[in-house]
Amino acid sequence: MNAQQIVLASRPEGMPTADNFTPQSVELPPIKPGEFLVKNLWMSVDPYMRGRMIDRKSYIAPFAIGAPLEGGAIGEVIESQHPDFPVGTKVSSMLGWRSHYVSDGTEHTALPQTPLSESHFLGVMGMPGMTAWTGLNRIAKLQAGETLFVSAASGAVGSVACQLGLLMGAKVVASVGSDEKAQHLKSLGVDAVINYKSVDNLSEALKHAAPQGIDVYFENVGGDHLAASLDNMNDHGRIAVCGMIAQYNDTAPTPGPSNLANIIIKKLKVEGFIVFEHWQHYPEFAKQMGQWLASGQVKAEQTIYQGLDNAAEAFIGLFQGKNKGKMVVQLNN
Ligand code: NDP
Image 1 (cartoon, helix red, strand yellow):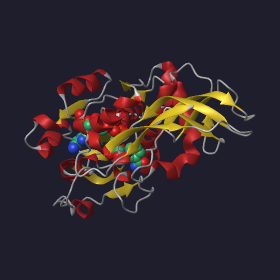
Image 2 (cartoon, rainbow, N blue to C red; image 1 turned 90 degrees about the vertical axis):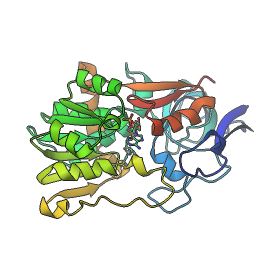
Image 3 (cartoon, rainbow, N blue to C red; image 1 turned 120 degrees about the vertical axis):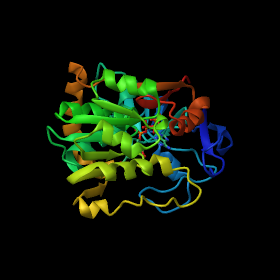
Image 4 (cartoon, rainbow, N blue to C red; image 1 turned 180 degrees about the vertical axis):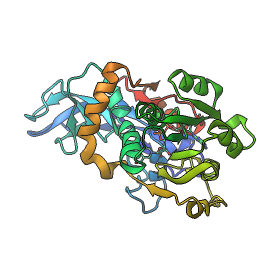
């Protein structure tokens, strides 16, 4: 059968553009014993994919020019000669950016029965939710009564970090790129929200939003957000360094904040992490998150683009603030 896929046509210079992506049609072989055919239903676009478009050594290999892109996806088995993946099984894989594919089951997980839309296994119940949980519990060790600052706070990771922070008994301060996003976070109970695009001095705005200072900063953005947090951290504060999206499209090295000495003066602990190194804790996270979602204590949010043809636009939209909650693409194959 014919499958559609998106390949990396060229490496982006700065902000990715539509020309960096090419749709392709490929003929799939018939399945053999031990294999199954998957029709993808949902695919994820994530900021880390921008890093994989650069030809450099990192924690994960770069995408190759001319090869199909990869990323989280949820699909349905539509033909099978594999005993563990019968027809109708919903599977999670890293084989997004394509309509169909043949698998032998390697690195595939059958999804549990759940009342949730399967798409949430790419968001709040999947890698981004697990990232928020890991950063707060395992890296920053947030305590009740502390003040948490979250940047990119209405996105996939940030919106979960805010909600978990509130559940853990923290005062939560957030930063987002629009008034609408700010209002939305306030409706979820976030104590103070800054629209970073509308303030002249982020450090002053943060001081105003958190006059008691910040104990934990969940870092998603870098640059001026890191500098502002360093100005406002309390002694012995912790910074869980999750991402630095403000720098992902830079074409030249960006200077670091000039106030790094605050790490010494305030005796801060600054720790980077990659969620996949913590994946052995996924069952514990999934159990808790399943309960929070069922009880309504955590709200699962997503922005949905339709069709593989719009996947590149959805991906680029991450760097333009087009999403609230998890950005996903629904495939209509
Ligand atoms: P999001 O869903 O948060 O999407 C990106 C959001 O970032 C946008 O909606 C936008 O919101 C904001 N943004 C984009 N560009 C800028 C900018 N220049 N300055 C400030 N904000 C910006 O993405 P995720 O939740 O998936 O990821 C959040 C961060 O976490 C990223 O840095 C990502 O790389 C990192 N990450 C790290 C992991 C790890 O294991 N360490 C795992 C998963 C994610 P707005 O409108 O508010 O500007």
